[in-house]
Length: 288
Image (cartoon, rainbow, N blue to C red; front, side, top):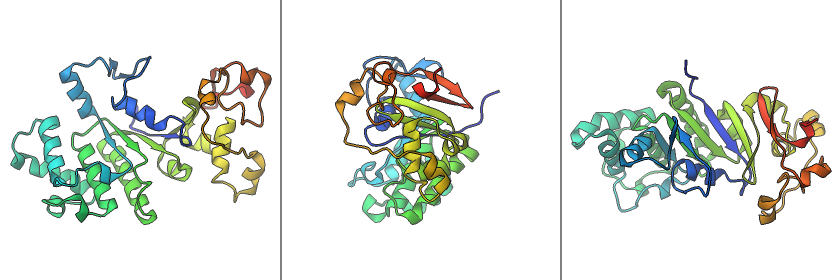
């Protein structure tokens, strides 16, 4: 029996590797080493038909909806093209009911967007069109890179709820990337914390959020949980500096030069990943 669809949130500050990871998943970058498997298949060894299959299975929603569309093209043409190339629908008239259905799912309809360019939409409306295009092929995995960061605060919850409906009603799992811990907590089922390209902690959202283990995770949560004095006292604040290349190349823990709990071994040897209380953490504090 397969697991139910989930929203898997990836968090971390700028430079942690979040966007690079998504570009690899979307085959926008070729890795120098390693393998990325999707349903047992290496996504970089797919033939032409395999690539088409993968694009039906895995779709993306990006941060800036205005960069997702060409300003001299009508927005609705992107939906017709997606229906043609991913659903094999040759005639536009056959695609109309399918396109209208996904647009209504995100709170729009075909009549509202037909024949219009991006300048005739608000940012929130255009992002909904981006989501509609992404779910047109009924993907099993949706990758979302900071999809609400450029929207007004009043629109964010509505769009976040749309992602929840995609999980619950369409059965799609979602990889949701953000630097906003409040957004992460609202939408996520599970969370992974990246630091300088390393996964330092992963587990169920409520477990990690209520009792973070890795010092970096504690620092991130401290930035949004200061009003709770009990949590404030629990977490020692850590100051962040600019990105240093040396941190990526460091032989030990990437967080060692900022960690208030650093041990001698942290600077020389990378900590292994261990399982503690339903989550995985990479930290020498928990290695006996």
